[in-house]
Amino acid sequence: ATAHNLNVIRLNQAGFETHGPKTATVPNPSRQPLDWRVLDEAGRQVAEGRTSVFGEDAASGEHVHTVLFSDIRTPGSAYRLVVGDHESRPFAISDHPYRSLQYDAFSYFYQNRAGVPIDVKHVARPDLARPAGHETETATCFSGTDQLGTAWPGCDYSLDVKGGWYDAGDHGKYVVNGGIAVWMLLNAYERAQVKGGQGAVAFADGKANIPEAGNGVDDLLDEARYEIEFLLRMQIPEGTKAMVPVGPQRRDHPLQLTEIDAGGMAHHKVHDASWTALPTAPADDRQRRLLYPPSTAATLNLAAVSAQCARIWRSIDLEFARRCATASQRAYRAALRNRSIFAQDRFPGGGGYGDEDVSDEFYWATAELYASTGAAAYLTALKTSPYYLGAPRSGSTATGDPSWSSVASLGSMTLALVPSPLPEEDRVRVRANLAASARAYVEEGWQSGYGVPFGGADYPWGSNGAILSRAVVLGLAFDFTGDWNYRNGVIQALDYVLGRNPLDQSYVSGYGARPLQNPHHRFWAHAADPAYPAPPAGALSGGPNNQSMTDEVAKTLIGRCRAQTCWVDDIRAYALNEVAINWNAPLVWTTAFLNDH
Ligand code: 9MR
Image (tube, rainbow, N blue to C red; front, side):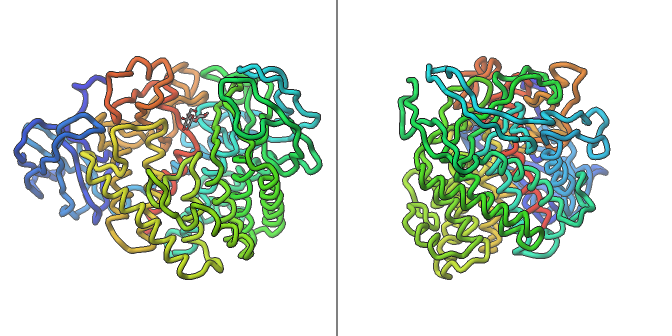
């Protein structure tokens, strides 16, 4: 779309809560406030006022005004906001504007399952059904020479690593990203259990359209378990040796490999020998699937998530809970033995997800194990961590942003939320630190012309996921403090991804007047080949990225966009417009949170 197609009044295209905050942003050079009014369906004026002149906004590059019209508290389907000569699109006000999005965002996970057919009964359109991809997936280790000249010997075992979710638009499965995504879904479950009420039954058995509905177990847990079973399969059997790079190494050089006792470690990832073409339906992939070396990060990620699994399933399926507990302890021990084995981005065919600082992963895994077992030894270990209770670190908020490479906040959220023998004063402190992060995010929202709780003039790969992951911290901070600024911050984040942004774009498929349509996805690839389906509703684009503009579309924008405008709805634009499990998970979390009141 070109600029003249855009509506200059930018607001959440999916609608507003009856009693919630209602804000819009209008780019306009005027230094003086402008008159605004809101009309109802019949064209009657229901509110009026004057804009606030925000001024120059760094992330959009615009001079903007903001409009606050929260006082309209009558549900309606087609209000319009008028500012000067401009009229917004019709927007709705309703009690639960996020109810269907919660389930559509959740369905993303089912529809990206590997190893099983996607059944027409469980999708919104027949063309979204597909045969199973990678139905059998017994993989052995990469052998041969990597892109930077390391000779890898391979391994003398293979693992059955079927199942789980595809990571994103590609067919890879990566333990660290699978782990944080499943953790976030399970955290939504744990949060709802602690709080009780409506949220605790939102994903009760039969509420979601997945094959397991009716099996007596909460649907959210069924979906999460599908991924956990895969993560457990990535763990290396005891008594197994592996060749790995030990310690920091030169990034641009062949690696020095050493043999280790790898039992209990997790392989970092499994993917094809080379990237599958776009489009490729999962069932049509004929390439070899390979395991890539174990890493400390993946191992601790597995330790963390399987500990969370152990405590949740204890009352639901004891056998599974025990399997998780055993896997967690094995992984944790293996990581303590092999503390600095880092994944290296040097293999063709998949993403890197490399991370050479695993101090936060140690903290997270230890926190999960402590919350699950209450064993004092874990608390002792936690107290030696620089992240304990979200201790401030330079350059970031008290608890740090949640992301695949930065997981300390996940540990802090668990310590703050989950009942455990944690000393009361420590629980108070970790909650206060989460609230301090939330407060910082809210303040960044005040510094943003579009109200987004993500300041600064630079937006990273997956910025929409980063923003919604902050909104998870905001949501928990609201639960802990009752401060409505934090709940409003969650709404501001959703307002932004649903249309209150300089591109006038809903980044969620199927929602809003200008929804995401052409995500980078190998099956939802209608934009590349009409034989493939368009995306289902409820998928979130990675979003604007002015930091690593690596794909062919993004490259054409370098130097020609400001952070929030470095985006195109183009299937080729993997650095801007891919969809991914770690971005859809906070979309589920935040919509479930808002629906729970
Ligand atoms: O989300 C990841 C982002 O933080 C990285 O900057 C980027 C480049 O390494 O990779 C992103 O993850 C991709 C992964 O490597 C492969 N599957 C698709 C993921 C989303 O784009």
